[in-house]
Amino acid sequence: GRETPGGFAYPVGIRFTATRDAAPSPALQLVAARTVAETMQTWKLETDGVGQNVTWEGVPAAAEFVGFSPRGDRVALHWGPNLGVWDSVTGKQAGPGLLVSGFLNAKTISFSPDGRLLAASGGNGEARVWEIATGREPVRLPSLGNFLVISLSFSPDGTRIAMSNLAGAARLFDAVTGQPASPLLIHSSRVHASFSPDGRFLETRAGRTLRLWDGHTGRPMGEITETDTIR
Image (cartoon, rainbow, N blue to C red; front, side):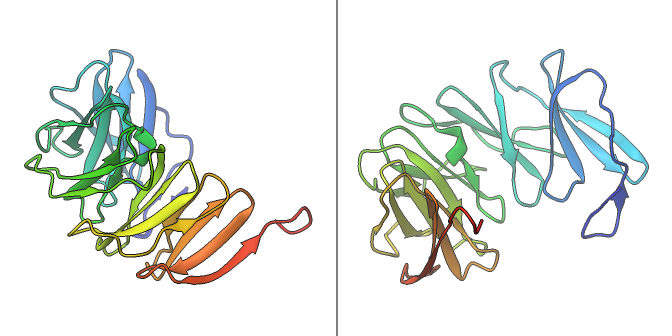
């Protein structure tokens, strides 16, 4: 079985019947699944296998699964330029639907650590942050240039957001004010940005080079370039 932080082990090879797609929550306590009847469900994992399941209410037929919140209690879905969040335990929608202007890059959709906020980017290079419960938009992050955003993530403490784009630019933002918290971090090609588990560092990867920056200020801390012999 697979050991979880809580000490439970789940059997390997759990089989779901009548499902088309399935994805586990971060702590492996729940599985979100789309049935062949095109309904979305949450299945609870017990120590001896699959337990009770809940069918989600009001899910559009075209909705696609995005991911669980860090705590596993919420799930994001998207359909076209629309976003929605459902409570993974009750199956009820957690707030009003959200609309992204233009093209929605589903890979940028990111929950805050407490699951209260959702961030996403459209095709205009901006990023928006919503309160899930109300649909209110307290923060909008300015564009790094008119290029597609390819990564968007909250710091582990939820105070900062890292954004990067197809043109090789990355930046830290204050998650409360939306103001830049670092200068533009320029790379030679498309770049993905993410925080270290403790939030002290921002990690950016462009091509075969990994760079480390101060996770609060963006001050450069070093870089590692992958070679043919060291990977």
